[in-house]
Image: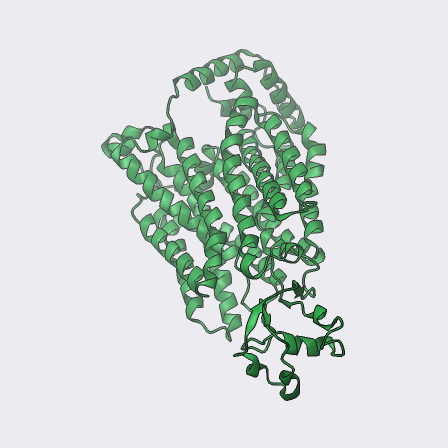
Length: 555
């Protein structure tokens, strides 16, 4: 007896499930808003040394602000004021000849009295709040890494809490943690406090992602899990597009954080209606509570209520027996030769997929478009990419899809490395195409990984790749800091990682139409596995979601 048979009796997909999906997809929209929030709150607007104080009773007292800037700050090659230097002494001769280039060889010092910022695009950002420019500009991107580290730690903690205390209670804890620390970060009075609060915000948001996905999957029958996969994945893209609109309307970083966190308040109000997972209740011997929620589902869906507890009690006993006999750990991923090989290759692929996606997403400048429009286009291209990849997975197979999307992403980055900046429209089209391909690589990785690992360690395998992907996400902002060494170095690194991980993906076996491996022996000795390729391709989303697919919450 399987739990799916009980869902069929009470109608496994009806108004009950649809309302549950809507209630849980709403909070998930907040996750991409916070994940990519650094793009806007960490933006560094044009700036130059503050020389207004030089006129206070000094030689520059009678000069206009523009004349003080000319005499006090050197010009770059493009004619704009230098960002981090000022003249050691006022250079009055520059006022007469008007040549900015004449000041290039004059002695300069670091800014002595702070900076003046261009507030035409952003009213305030982290950079303007705490002067995170020049020698301290790396701190803005470091906040992104700190946030993603919070996501990484949260994945481990909330995965354990969810299995021990249930999905519903863990979701409420995630809501409260995210709201408290999300709003608190908007009132931080120092950078260190802000960084700590961002870490804790990421920690809480992970619980929302993991538990909302698992809960919806556990309440939906097998035939409709593909629908859940598409809707759950699209909620990320919707949140991503909404972030561009929020950031455009709200230019102050503190207000923007509160704006993207506010929807969680509605989530708390609707939490009381969210049902606990009947599957989890049965696995933990709570038959009466499972009966209550299944009857509630049947009533809402106008289906037939379960007539007896015998089925529930029998299934409960089977779930407990299976739970007791399951002694597999993460160590089983590396105990045998072919499992070690599989673990190594999937780790490389996931690191490449995650670091490439976020490396592109966080670097949205330099294409001739404003930051809001570029981010919106980057987010919108994900929708057709997600829908398209589901078709190609059954046409050309998983391995070719995974390798192809990564290699093509690397190719798009390589093309932009050599294209001159004057061709901004061509660079923009290529960058958008690369962004869509990187999202397609992410979508493929979810399905492919769940099909590669045997059933007995599939959850452990997905947990491992989830951890590696978060590591790649945390590294991405640090890679972008290398532009100070060489402007093109971040693009070269991201391109190389995408191409390398794409080539490594070719070493994986094809799983299209193949029977899913059940045991480690089937991986070590393929002859033990009966590979029956049917004329009808396997539904990728159903196979993906069959393993509860907690990896989707990685973002």
